[in-house]
Amino acid sequence: MRRKVIDDQVSLITGLGLGFTIAIQLTTLTRSDFADIYSQITTASRFFALIGSYLAIIGLLLIARISWIESAIGHDRLVTWHRKSMPYALYFITAHILLVTLGYAGGDQMRVGAQLWNMITTYPWMLPATLGFVFLLLAGVTSYRVFRTGMSYETWWVIHLYTYLGVALSFMHQILTGSMFITHPLAKYYWIALYVSVVVAILFWRILLPLSRSLRHQLMVSEVVAETPGIVSIYISGKNIKELNAQGGQFFSWRFLSKDLWFQSHPYSLSASPTNTSLRITVKALGDSSTQLAHVKKGTRVFIEGPYGIFKASSARIGRHIVLVGGGVGITPLRAIMEEFPSNTQIDVLFRASTEEDLVLRKELDQLADKRGARVHYLVGSRSVHTMSYEYIKKFVPNFHDAEVFICGPHALVEAVKAAAKKAGIPKNRFHDEAFAFHGN
Ligand SMILES: Cc1cc2nc3c(=O)[nH]c(=O)nc-3n(C[C@H](O)[C@H](O)[C@H](O)COP(=O)(O)OP(=O)(O)OC[C@H]3O[C@@H](n4cnc5c(N)ncnc54)[C@H](O)[C@@H]3O)c2cc1C
Image (cartoon, rainbow, N blue to C red; front, side, top):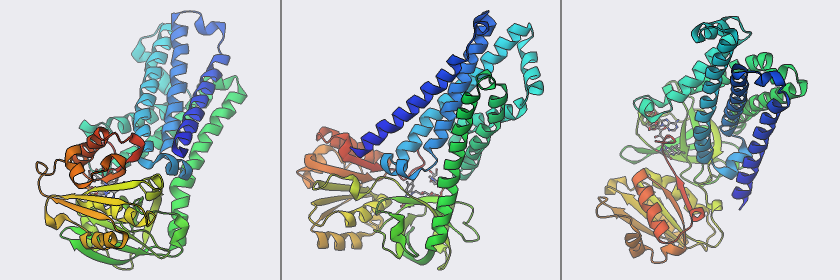
């Protein structure tokens, strides 16, 4: 319910802002803006510029990690909204460039190419704005799956950082040449305030808060334990960790300050309920950094960003029958979540794995299940045997239709269980999933 209210509030504020932005332009229109076809094209181009820039600003705000928005909407949904809105920002800004060049070229009776060159080289702040557009274009293009495949996460991330530069570089061009700002100081102040708020939000939530939390809680690696071949648990000790308000199943972005790892940060979910002095993650070696984590030394300082995500016990309705479905290393946040439900909660765990070796944290799960009266069903083997269809799940969980489902695992598993839940009549708000993947993979 709270999530829906915040969804509505975010949509309302974004819509009002867009309406206000368009209104700014409308109030500055004069007869000359419609004098001939070229003036009309130029006028249209200004609307495209304003709307595109507004969407880019909103796109950045969505990933500014603003705590109260993150905790209500969920990190993955915010990133999805960002991914959906940013291409439109780019389309609108591209349309602005094409139309304004066409409009000016027609008005001045010049060739389009010559007019574009003239604008870039002689108009104030046009060169930085052009560079900014190229940065935005680069970030946009490299986000398409076809270009992203084969590119390391780190390369993609660095290119994406240029989005901030891209938006910043176009700011002065907008303020100094936008007719809606030149003639209307109030509109200008609104636009400046919008940009300043975004800069402050990004500086505070993405840099200052994580930095101060990491320093305040003095996090460091206290132990590395091999769980199964290729999977380790890393225990991190610290001070007053409860102040982070983290819950089992949520994730942090972790930066281990060792010689080989300090320059990258990766998301890992908590695999045990946090205590006031310790956190734990369980990591499968999938690439360079996750493999190196097995060798991280005791005493290594750790910087965090988070906690993020709404994959946690408190997202479920109180008193519900809970079904936790984990695939391989995807069981780790579920192991943490399991600890945090009230003791009288009926819990069924379905743990899918290809081999017995992949049953990570099995001993802990059994102990927890014994303590809480939960049932753990180990489903080891091929997909053809464990279809995870509605009929198949019902064999283990006869009252599946009553359940609130939490799932973390490979995409195919999530899709199969989603279809089963749909068939069982479980509504979407009783189905919670977490992907251990680069969003959109
Ligand atoms: C919300 C979330 C929670 C996760 N929790 C766990 C966990 O508890 N245990 C676990 O073993 N794994 C978890 N992962 C996956 C883990 O983050 C990746 O396996 C790890 O980042 C791989 O990094 P690498 O350099 O070793 O491999 P690479 O070879 O660089 O990447 C392997 C895969 O991981 C993706 N990836 C790499 N870096 C990142 C990043 N910073 N953000 C998102 N995706 C990335 C790549 O796109 C690629 O698909 C989680 C992922 C997400 C998004």
